[in-house]
Image (cartoon, rainbow, N blue to C red; front, side, top):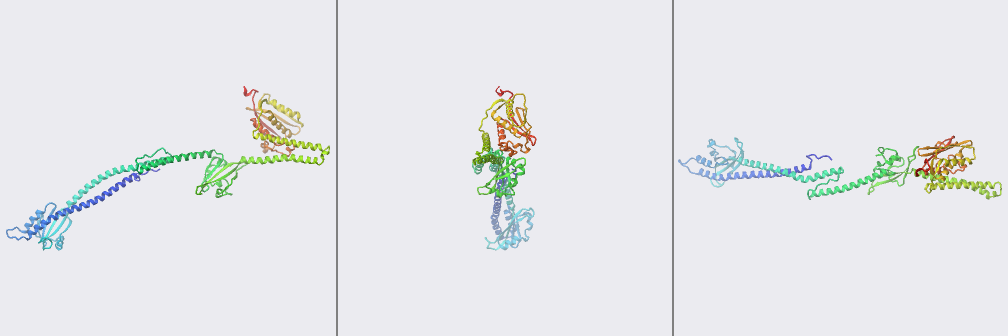
Length: 611
């Protein structure tokens, strides 16, 4: 999370807002206070002047109306004494001007030269003309201080009804009033600065009480974004922010529980997807792959990077037959054939739509199930039924034909009847062998059989079987034995293994030509005996060698059936050898001959592991 800059911090904003509000309030108060103070001081100043001017007017009026003789002082002298008496304090100068605009007296000692001269001041003329007092604030040319000029008419009677005798011109030093206001303003400014400093400190402290919980919640949110839910926000009070902190801690706990549950479910899902044998592919709402597990990758033989963000129909090779909308509405499964020359693979694809409660489609889940073995089993079942039916139909058809002939009277013919009965008996025995072989294979498939094991010396056991066939063979075939002189003991079911070897030797005799050889050998490989039975027969094509142990499989069906085989002998042999812990296989070259190999575990002496 990006760090908040200093000037964008809510702490600074709160302090600035608080200080600005205080400054605005102080400015408003200061302006109002300064204005009112200035007006009040100015009014008080003017009132004091007006109060004194009434007495001055009275004294001047008396002097100007007074009768004078030769012994009396002149009017100018009397007026000069009066104005000097009153020109004290804030009054800079008082002038007495008669009705003809001549200066009769002035309180300014340095300005006595103007006495007797006519003045031409506009404010004096305005006051005489208006017969009322006029005042104004002017700037002193010498000191540049503000002065308040007041011109008041002097009437010959009390009140403004009489005749004007002249005017009183007063210049007062009102600058002192403004100096007082400035001094007070300075004091107010210093007080404002001190109050602002205290306000800023208090504002910072107050703002911290608000921003500290918010900062803690910000840090907690950052920790939560990194997956750390152990940290809790400190609750500083029971106000709204305190309640928010409590709610935030509760939210943290709930989010931790939800995250733990989600993580557990995610791990379960990941474990299920990883360990399940079925392939799973998930898409987004546009049909592009967003998830694929390892079995699906192995089935499709592609990389994860090459699959992600590709359309599902393209990944499954269905883009020509189905669109994404078709797959969404697909109710039945679809079989996919990914077989190659080297590998046989058939998959069954089931489609499930991911929908919200509103019905909005969020994506599609495709489950791929390997049904190759099922298809193989089904094919083998159909082939098995067909083979059994065919194997039974042939002898039954033969028997029916001969029995029909006997029923039609052939039994009376002493030359034909025995032959027909002999054929019928042979086909019956063939069906019995077929049924017995099927029952035996069925028991092996269901593991419903037991091996009666016993330790036997294999060379003697093998030689007895070879001797029996050598004594009873009808064609001109030579037996050659390549057996070791050492004694090797095997733990076997002698009846079952005798059946296996009988079947192998019988096949070798069937397909060996007159004058051919059948070779028998035993070698040792680690802890196994490797037994060999080889003939000089017609051989088996290379592509068919691996299938001779399948049930009912014949390389040459017509010739094998004519020789009386059921096609189950080698299949039974394979089951028996594997039940004894060994392995059986064949090597053959067409036109040269075939060799059957099988292995058995052995012991060097009869006691074996019982010592």
